[in-house]
Length: 184
Image (cartoon, rainbow, N blue to C red):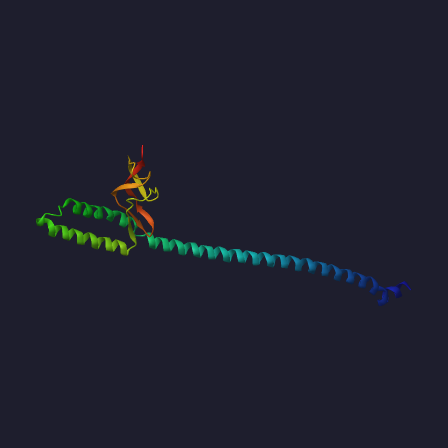
């Protein structure tokens, strides 16, 4: 009979069926764990992709802004080197006596040259800082002297020794000014 029990397929199926059920349950647990791990990995990959896309967009914006600024301010050094020419033309006009008939043609030529030069600078968004009568602003003015004056409010620009200039609203050279101390 012992040989018959071993040969009987029905008696062996019960332990094998239990083992198969346990194996199937174990596989389901492994599948669930794998599904959770894969889901978590997918979520992390999505998050990383979103971060990378945001970083790329920020980089593009930064590069675009840098290129725009490079174009805007490429002339800054060149303009700074041309400003003494404007100053010299203005000094030449101030030195010529307006009543002298012999120099009227020279004066007119210098005036036209200065006007043309300032027109070109204006076309490239270079603006003069002419602060006479304005409140002193250290961002655009450089005080070279303070003078007491009871008729003028304190920290008011009374005189401009040298005009300042901006390029695209960025200071190229501050105006050199005399500022009122107010009443002493």
